[in-house]
Image (cartoon, rainbow, N blue to C red):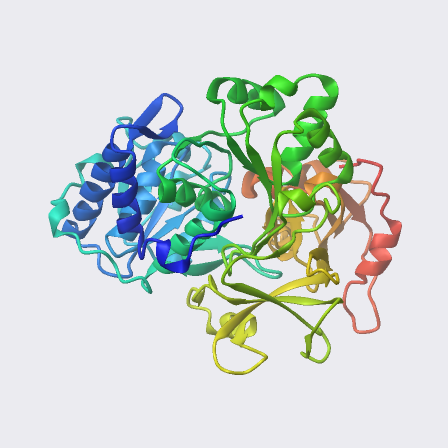
Length: 529
């Protein structure tokens, strides 16, 4: 299968948009709902907005937070910020007030671009956005923010724009770590453009393709889908995924050739195929599908292959700190459906002993370390965290590698399998979830003492989040109060699947909560909440 050479990638996102505008000048390029724009229109909107940002005073490296619902302006705002020499900070559509405030305090943006539609999901938008310059998308005023400026009013002369340096930061992607609140990961223009070229190459994307994008642009996987479409100038339709019934309607209406998802989506697809909500006809237009964020369940992949045998399945692996890392050739999928394959062109995947740091050769199990192309610049303003994950190449010779924290097995043919995490980080529906962040949402509530959060196997969805707290088991309303607090403060993918109240939590000899003892008491099959 052919792969693009490194020099086939655009050096920066402004050039990528300009090339896409030329390749698909009069063709539909980006559609969201009833909104649809051609390549030429996308280029014009991005260039005018980028020049407007510069005119408004955006300096090189300054951040612009993009807090928007699914709309064409979301892509325009991200691309325009990067094209202007700034750093786009896309925020996940499910984040609540606490997470939004954390990101804004950490990123210190020059401005926030948002909409009345997106702010409906916040409990107190004026307080959350207090002290920030706000630009409004759409005609509706923002509740409690009458001074917001219209994003459409940001206009400038595109000819004054100079392409940013390839090494200049372009986006700041926030993702949960094993402890604490989410950290920002800095990706530069070159990595984003090169990642788009590499993925477009092995997917064999062509201008005739039509991608259905259900993943958020705040997710490196979703952003790569947009940039890969721009790389070849093919059509992309972005939509919110609300359930298998809505997916069935989208597949019939859009008739995409490509669809990216995480294991929970493919479990829905498999369930839909098993129950008849989805049929062979729904997948008739698809040429390929991709999976990342965890391995497909064998039963789900079996349903997918049985119903849509013509569809090529790309099992992939990536971490936000390195954008994209590996994929399995679809010709090997049926024989090795739980493997994520081998390194991308230009990427090296090393296995390192967790105890000695020694590089392991041949068949082995160790921590996966990403070397070569696509390594991010590090964590935003967190030098200690950066030094812990972004380290010198263990083989010597200079260069920086990323330690993933994932334990991975490699076979004699160089294929890789995920084994587990070295830290406590959870994976839920393709999202990384910090147990500490979930625990912090309920800490200090009346009646709540010590809190511990961990994960149990949840099948295709990844982990089921378990929250155990010290309190009064006889307080009939305590669990419901905890669940209400979680619903108010945490996005849906961070909601506990099980809440257990105990008179006290067990401790080990070091005085720490004995998580192992708690796990032994949990029945993962009860479904209790």
